[in-house]
Image (cartoon, rainbow, N blue to C red; front, side, top):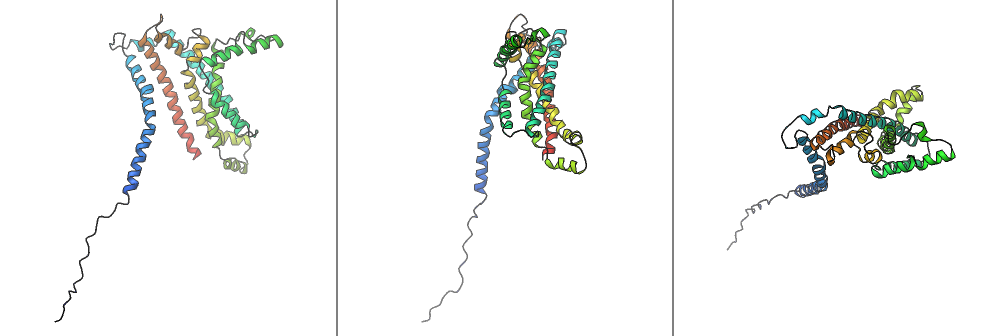
Amino acid sequence: MTATFDRTPPLPAEPGPVPDRNAAPKNLAVGQQVWAWLGVGPFFIFALMFLLLPTVYLLVGAFQDPDGHFTLQNLADLFTPSILSAYWISIKVSLASALVGALIGFFLAYAVVLGGLPAWLRPTLMTFSGVASQFAGLPLAFAFLATLGRTGLVTVLARDFLGFNLYGTGFNLLSFWGLTLTYLYFQIPLMVLILTPALDGLKKEWGEAAQVLGASQRQYWTMVALPILFPSILGATLLLFANSFGAIATAYALTGSSLNIVTILLYAQIRGDVLHNQNLGYALALGMILITGLSNGAYIWLRARAERWMR
């Protein structure tokens, strides 16, 4: 009996599902994004609570009277002579401290970056600038009163040992120039911190190319370096202006009400003394926000222009 064999080949097995090799990386990327958003979450909460909501509150309050009714009287009151004078004094103090701070800060930054000074001076200056740029308010006012006040250390030493009467020259710490001098303590370090990266961005090849073409050092700075640095310098000066325009603690602790600047006037309207008009204070704050906002917006635009040369 002969056995027969089925020579028909077996059917191939059905292909199973192809594993998705991108599934794990995608899940990993989603997880990383979730953690990244959780990381910046506190920043958005902070900005919402201390920046956006107060700004909206001021904006609404500037157009209301004490009973909550809509009015434009608060904005009209901003054009009274006393308030216009306060704005003008604040602008002059901010402009003077910004220009002087930018000039001195530029030369300080240039000295430590390109001036060929000992290497240890740069980290020392940068560390001091980082601390001094944040030193303001009551401690700064007390430091200047203890140093340059009528019975301050420098004033007394100059009078007793050098025969120089500082206040006999007409100087007064509780005045326009006294407040400007005090602001310079944090304006100059801030300028150093902002301008140092811009000076670092000047490429050595630019100077070498100018020298090969026969340009002098003065021509290199006037035709190459300063035009490149100008957006950074101007932007930093605008940032210094906005920084001093919004300062109140230092000015109030130093001069009290003897100098009529807008931040002190705003404080008087809000805190509830005889000048109390809370909604007028909101309008004053709104005007300050507009001025500082324009300054900061111009700084951001100029910084973006300056960064094109650093790429």
